[in-house]
Length: 190
Image (tube, one colour):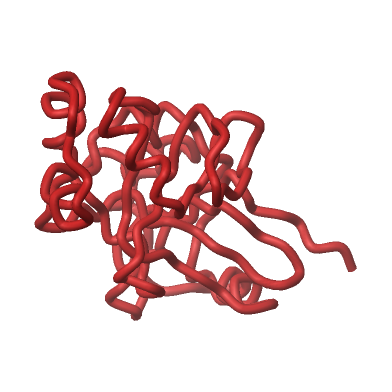
């Protein structure tokens, strides 16, 4: 049986999600194949902005546009795996040392060179910077889907890069025509 890839899809945590790491989260799936899946939670900002992250990794924000536009953006809790490591979800994909290609236009980069470029030019502008990621072993995400832990919908880059974090989950729900408040926390099967 061929595995359907959910890369470039949103995972919407169902109300009954027991894991506090994922309760009320919107996760963008960056990679999904027979070996497992990797995603970034995109609606859970932490108490750190980009300026303080850059200070922590000893990269000065060199240009005024980067300081003004980039520095105040939030950093996100990307998931419970490798929370000490940074990941940049970005558009355009560009050419960086360590980038996972999600789509023709969106990449996930974990190398320092993208941060350096952002400090010097403020680009790429469409970004979500996270500490940590969400990971699933082979078959784990499929099992969670069969248990009604998640709803899935094709991702919309306007939600990913152009919507405030607190509005991303409801906006993704609207792609399905569903209001989160109307979802039951009891799963059922017909």
